Length: 230
Image (cartoon, rainbow, N blue to C red; front, side, top):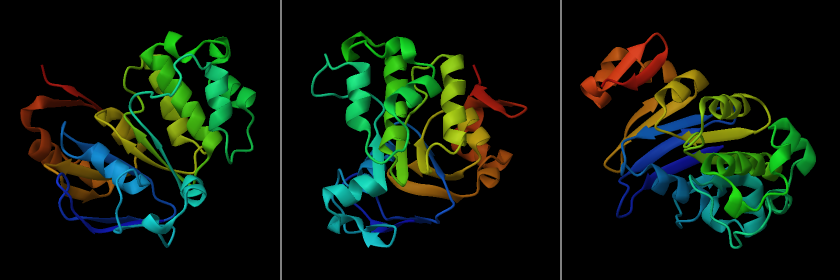
C-alpha cells in the first residue's frame, strides 16, 4: 500500500518504512520531530521520488490519481473563503464516497452546524467538519494530523469511533494522545529529531521499557490510559 525508501531532506533523515494493505499507522513524537513534514512528503505536498502508493511512484501521479489514493487532513482548517458554509465545504469535499453530505452530517450528529459559516465554527467544530470531509473524499489512504486536538471528551469519543470503524478505508494518525494511540491499536512509528526511532506493533511500543525510554518520568500510566505525570 505504502512504501518510503531512504527519504531525507533538511528536516527528515533516512526515512524507511512500508505498510501493507490491511495495516493502519500511528505516528508519534515530540514537537518538532518531523511528523507533519513526513505527512506532507507522503501526500505529495513536499515532492519526493522515494514514496510509492499502491505500487505507483507518488511523484508520477496526476492530481486525480493522487486524490483517489491519498488525502491529508491538517491539524487546522485552512479555507480560501472563511464565509463558506459548513455544508458548502462538505459539498466541495465529496469525491468518491457513496454517502451524501446529509448522511455524513447526520452520522456525526452535526445537523445544527449545516448553515453556519466556517468563520463561526469553534476549533472543535472545525475538526469534526474536516473529519466529515475525509469520509466524503473517501481516498484509499487518509492522513489525519492531530484529529482530536481541541476536542472535548464527547467529541473525542465520536472521532475515535470513526477512526476505529469502517467509514474510512486506511488511515495514518499523527497524534500526541497516547491513550488514543493505544486504544486504536495500529502499528506505531515514533520519531525523534527527524528520524524514525521505532517502527513496530502497537503492543511492543507500549511496553514499559519503551515508554520509559521515550518519555521518562513525564508519563503516568493508569490501566490502559496515559497522562502527564504532574
